[in-house]
Image (cartoon, rainbow, N blue to C red):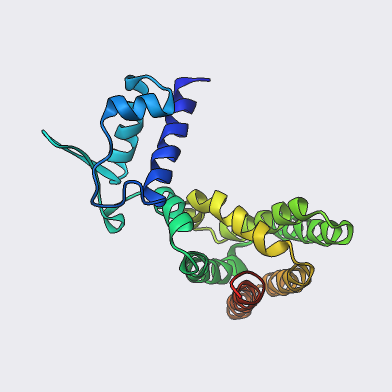
Length: 231
């Protein structure tokens, strides 16, 4: 395994340590030698992983004391926040994620109404058909993949390069959450209908209707989350 891959693995493991409370925010990580032995990596690899977390604002080195985990509010990596919050945030974690999606994706849909191209519309139609086909054959993995791809097209069609970059780091968490809800057949039925509504509004080039359609989709997603997952 390449060192870069090992570094990524160790970074994820250290975030897991923070998430499960072994070293909570404010706490000191174990000594480098102990962590290196625990993860079966060299101290050089461990230090590289710690440098990644330090650059993300997750940890800070206190001379003479060790490496301390900073409060999550001070972290600068969306990916790190999502990784830890998704595992330690309880019922609030998926709700917070949906709140972020609502804020970003409704605005993206509004922008996409006037920026989308014919190719964007064709791609959205293709992903919607993939969702329908996956639903018919009971393929949850394919359904989730098409669902996420549909939303990615909307984000890019907004014409704002910051939009897709903002949600990109959350892709792993989003996929896990979509898979969790899409296990339930009624959720897939709702999703197909809501995505069709978004596509129709975008096809008409109506910004207000596109925003409202995405808002409706987020409302339905919240209801499904509360009924099938959080109940």
